[in-house]
Image (cartoon, rainbow, N blue to C red; front, side, top):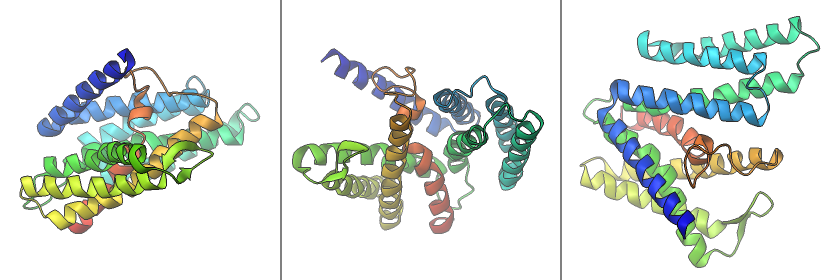
Length: 267
């Protein structure tokens, strides 16, 4: 019971921070997104024991440059440049220190850079989208509706009527019924949310439904990494939840999806 209340309280505090940062936007949300990315990337590197090795250290350096570029120089259109530059640095480290690092260590550091800081940066980028006639703070919250909303609805439906395993080896407790319920629940929440704030209800429901499907892939992918490396949680930062990657595992993939869908449907 104590563990439940710890998890509940920390979840409420985290949600309050996300809401406040979303409303304020600008530098506040930028700082929060940067902090989440830094901590999350470090958690990822620790899984592969790269946090003190050159590939991981260079990843942290490029993470800082990437976020400075997004904020100060509006270099979001040149994100590919940063990815190529980081890859070239990793290849140089690999070649000139050979055989100190293995091929998979180079690949893991690069994967982590794309998977965590680049994809999480779309939390802030979505909030800053120049969408005419729409409040981007309202669009920003769709990221969390289709990730955490889906997760909550999937859990509830799975507990009530879940019978068929979704991924029996990877996550035995998740069910197909829960997954469908999560998508439907996220779409419904998105529809009601849009109605309350006078947004386009069918479009928001569609965005949340698509985001919910993707969020479950992100959730399972994060679980697969933990299973492969024999760890329970990525960290202990959030009491009752684990680390940043434990709580933002689905947000990582829904943030860029909502950004892309918002540009397509709402811009």
